[in-house]
Structure formats: structure tokens, C-alpha cells
Image (cartoon, one colour):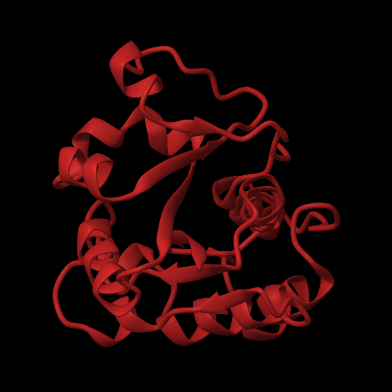
Length: 193
């Protein structure tokens, strides 16, 4: 089996997340992609992240009808800060014979050397990068660039920060998220302030 891991706060999940997973499925011939919502992300303070129940509902709405995409609740259920190396170790133990791929965006690659146990990650899982327009590789060490796989398909220029700004401004989310995600954001009153 070949699997991908796509982690994050998914606050909210958007078209670039789904496009990254779809591109990895196609280009790397993955059997499934695990979307892993962070319980307590290390780089964000707890009050700035929407409650897990909403982020989970948004993920379920975005992934409905996509059987190769699975939501892994492991980080939401465990205590402590959510570090990627914990999740990779958990999935390596659960699927010892599988090939694993960590899916990240180009913006995450720029900060990858600040991740906890980043060299361990490079030794224990293949890192796959999806690039979005406007996110260059300046500042990424060349030795790191040589150790990752870059997907051919470019990702849409969408960010959770822009989506939250659009909600606060009363602007449409068309083209940024799937309609079911926009509906949940509206019904739950998310991102209004």
C-alpha cells in the first residue's frame, strides 16, 4: 500500500488542500490519503483555532464522495501538542510494509527546517511538495530541495487566511471552498470576527 498524509488545522479546509491530495493520488499512484486535523498545533495559540468539531465537519463536507480520502482522528484524540513526527511514527507502526508520503505545500517547505525532528521525518517518510502560485522557494536550502518530491500540478492560489478574511468582509467563497464547506461556515457563523 502507498499512502499520503496531509496534516493541518484545516481552518477551513479549502480547494488547495484537496488539489494537493488529488495531485498526489494521481502522480504518485497512492492508494489513499489521510487528512489529519491537528489537535493542538504547535505554531498557533489555542484560542486562534476553531473548535475541532467544526474543523472536522468542514473536512467531512469537503471529502464527501471521495473514498480514497480518509480522515485520521488520531491527533484530535491524543493529548499534547500535535507534531507531525508523532503521526508519521503512528502510521509507520500501523502500516509497516506501506510506503508513506508526507504532503505539504510550498509555504510549509519554507519553514520545514523549523519543524520538530525534521531530519527524522526526511529519513522516515518521503516529503512531497505542492506549489501554489506566488509561493517561491527562496530561503529553502538546496540540500532540502534535492530531498523532496515536487508535484507537477500547480495548486490553486487559495489560503485559509484569505478565506477567513473574505468571510469577515462578507465576500463570496465561490472558487475557494466546495459549496458544502461554505454552507457549514455560514450556518456555524465561523470566521466572522
